[in-house]
Image 1 (cartoon, rainbow, N blue to C red):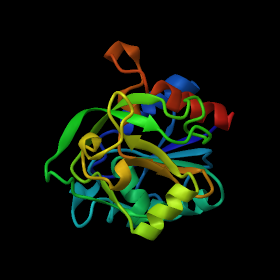
Image 2 (cartoon, one colour; image 1 turned 60 degrees about the horizontal axis):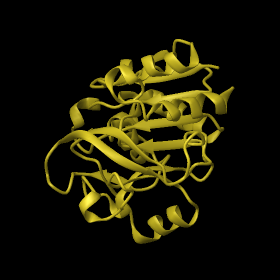
Image 3 (cartoon, rainbow, N blue to C red; image 1 turned 180 degrees about the horizontal axis):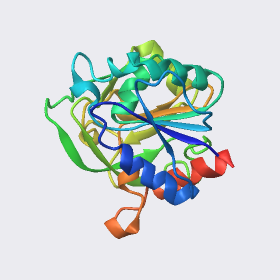
Image 4 (spheres, one colour; image 1 turned 120 degrees about the vertical axis):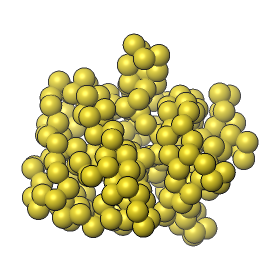
Length: 229
């Protein structure tokens, strides 16, 4: 199994995700610089969280035009598994690998806290070790995490069961009060139609070890590693 983590100027969760992946796969991911024009053969590609290019222009828009992204898009279209977390989710939408966009939080403030998520899809590469409607606690840390898409796009996402996670409360209730950033339909993470690309704002790599008091992200990583073995 070959894993690549793409590193952009301003990435700050690249080492965090690499450590989590190593923990569950027993392999060191390759750290791939954004200016590279070739991508190592990769079963899994991760776009980590952070502030690529300082979040100038639209978040993720400059990173989406980095040389390596041509290869990431090509690999995704050829079936490689791709994850974008936080800023990585923004890059996936900017590069066209996922629909919609991420805009400024409804409250116009940076949010950093643990938040409950409801598992909406338990049959994907990324979630099959959870059960549908499980409530898990995963940290968020973003200023532009408000997922937006047109009504037609949202209907298509929901009709095809492509919502991976939604923001909720500890009882699994989904409403405006349990929506931290204003995301349409409380959407926290989505899949592409082929099921091999996932974008999510919450950070599972920050909830993957009981030593830090958060381990609800462990099943996220075991799902992925088992799917690729």
